[in-house]
Length: 420
Ligand code: NAD
Image (cartoon, rainbow, N blue to C red):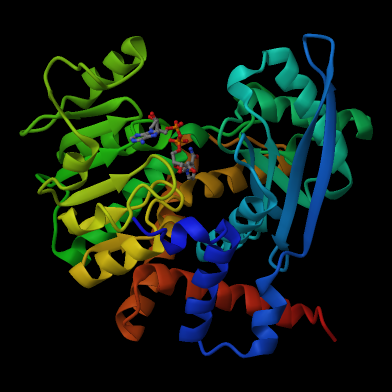
């Protein structure tokens, strides 16, 4: 098969392509494009650490701040063998738009270290984290740039980052990272926030599509943190979650899987595969099911030009970041599928990260009900203007969300007068 655009272009080229499409729809002048297109700052660091074997290995790490006109940079840190500067730049830009769409006072940032934590011991990961934190220390801080967990990083790693940063300040600085353990200033509801935000946007989309959650047939690709919470919430709202998958396989039940039992099953079996009250199907069969709502909640680029034509769902709620390639996006648009784009759909995670930062800065802690109710308000308030732009300007929901985000960032950049 001939290589597709997604395969030949870098992630940053693809992020720029998405930016230019929305900027064109806005008729954005070149001066404004130039002011928000490129990352403000990109730091490349060498991270030498002692491995358990006694030898020294030097890892490469990055921290990129794409735009801070609306507030400190915000974005996760990824530990993965495929981390590159181009990927981190793309993800940082994505965070700028995501924070702007939900109108929280943050800019976009992202970080990463090229490593394979699956083959590293906990002590090696701790040494890597502390040395990487030391290397990026001059550019992070509660008012400057606030990291969070991303692929293969977790609350324990955030605790080590906070500890390393705090040691240089002489006092505890919980606001330097979010996604911390609750005992160190983490927020109630952070674990479920992405899934709850996805559910909130599905609720907002239903009246527009004249669809009801009750009785809707749902397929969820990726039964991890985000996917399992969405499945649980949809199940509680009486939707029929007929299929779910993880990296090992997919399970299907025509009249709906018992999600609570499936979560328990996965906890001890390590996968959804083999769930007793279900039959196995292939990943392509899951995508092609005759269902109302498809929730991609696994990895990037899972819906591509090869499998997109078979998708029949009316609504696609992007819990994952970048699950649909640009080619597949065009196919889905032509079919009339309603896509709730990632920068809106999964923004519940960064929104509750923002709540965590606010609580840390104010030395307060909110209860779960307060966190969830504030989250619901923000998700609903963010969905409506995106839908309005989609309908008025006849652009996809993705372009509408990016247009709104760019407008807010450009306005902030110009109002500050950053380039007199
Ligand atoms: P996770 O690791 O908890 O879950 C990912 C799930 O996807 C796992 O069940 C894994 O088995 C499954 N998976 C992996 N490859 C698969 C494949 N080929 N087919 C089917 N399933 C596959 O991760 P998560 O935190 O739930 O994140 C999932 C997605 O949501 C990612 O794209 C992430 O960037 C995005 N996201 C997560 C958050 C968050 O707060 N957790 C916030 C915003 C966006």
